[in-house]
Image 1 (cartoon, helix red, strand yellow):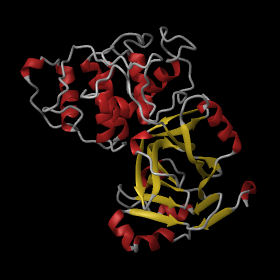
Image 2 (cartoon, one colour; image 1 turned 30 degrees about the horizontal axis):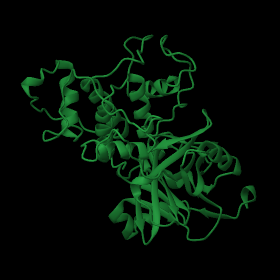
Image 3 (cartoon, one colour; image 1 turned 90 degrees about the vertical axis):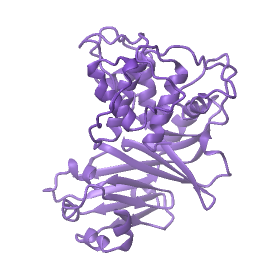
Image 4 (cartoon, one colour; image 1 turned 180 degrees about the vertical axis):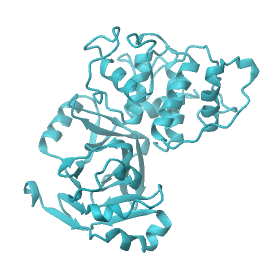
Length: 387
């Protein structure tokens, strides 16, 4: 009973995966699934290194999944093997457990007065290798929470993870569905931590018309806690958006922790303690946005459609690390695209970030607005199956 918690422990055999490969479910899904149906506060799966070594020859799309009545954890085999020391004799230990009371207290204080309602438990997902934490990956892991609650609209849910640097819960991308009356929410991030789900309620803004083409996207992103309105009940949809603001939107949309880059800012114009300092550093570190020079970022400068598309394509490639080079697409001559931007434009069209039949009109040098940022970010999340 580790940590005083009622525990279920599963020990995989050295040839455990060889046995799982023979399973018909694996042949169809390419997922090695280890399941416990017992009720407990903590689930721990121990996988011998020898067993993992036998997986090196498997196809890249294969994944390992740990399933419990509380939730599940899934990661591709390639990501799991990438940084493992396969010569070690120590096993890999994967655990899913109820988070400690200290996290509940942090969440309670953070949500006070916000109108957000916590749903279900806070679950702590972790992996240890050689008895050391192995909780950052090159690919996204899926963390599923299974929640018994009354029927609520899926578009009124947000996923949160704990950031140990800022000591706050921050948004991560999610997918949610009802299965036999039970809510299943998958939260995605390139790593492990404590995860939870909150109900955000119905969102509306007095300056966003009911028939606006941007309404659905604005409400989707505000409900996901990616964007927010103003204290006067407006969204200010036509307001231009700055580089710092869009960096924050990218981080919240993709689950990039604002405290994930602990180093001091390299940019002279990113002031220490500014609301955007950690977001700028994290998005630069992730390769989503760059400075104008090694020391100049221009956080308050507004962005154009062209600059927004560059960052959205980088965001796509941050998630889909195996994405192919874009095919050649003839850009409309009227757009007068600069040569350096054409491959990015082709990628945006190929992956469905920009649509030729779109009500959104791409004009390279036009300043991007808050509603346009919401619209294209929402589309990217759909393309990535993060919504």
